[in-house]
Image 1: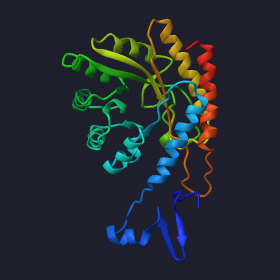
Image 2: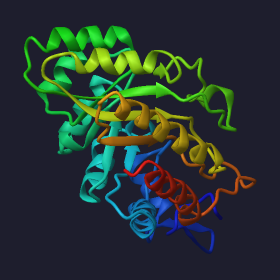
Image 3: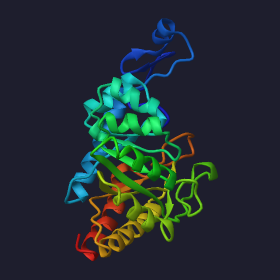
Image 4: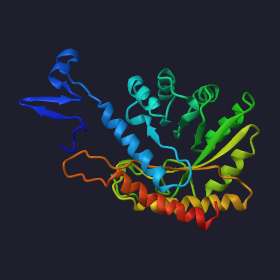
Length: 280
């Protein structure tokens, strides 16, 4: 049953989601059919929000990965829940705008953004462009001749091994994403902030998807705060630290993710320790 939405129920030989017959939905819309339970989504969002409010003494932001489901109806639900959003292409950004999403609450990721996509993002008022390579910095520099304000973050490769499938690991030092934290990351930040009009919003890392153990996140917190301190020593202010990764969910009956509150509590404890350590 843990594979099903919260509102799933059986009535005799019929299945219902949100009180609506699955058979009736399939007859109306045909199959194959994806059925999303708004109550389940709302419940999980509120669990994350309440847990972070409980364990962190400052504002936190929770972002949904648009790549996992980027359709207008669903994004409208997330907007109504006051969520933030990650997008990785001009198409996803366009869909979010059509859904009425506040572009200030959008992070634009991706390691191969085109010049046109970056132009569209800046023109649309995207709140955070997450810069992923030196070629992207070159594009930002060219676009700074056209725009007076470009809000950017830097994505770093933290060198962290997350115990998940090889294809969805993203935090290894030789990952195709981001600047290696021990070599190129500092010079990338310096090059980015030298561009007129760029507002440096902070640093981001992503360690992978389908993560059941909070330990890689705990390690990530330490690595990111260490790098933030290194930037601070260089006179560079880090306004935001963005800790990315996908919380494990149930794909099979054997999957047993920790509760949202337990996961958040462990990560938040490490954040609070580092806040005190570095007096942030």
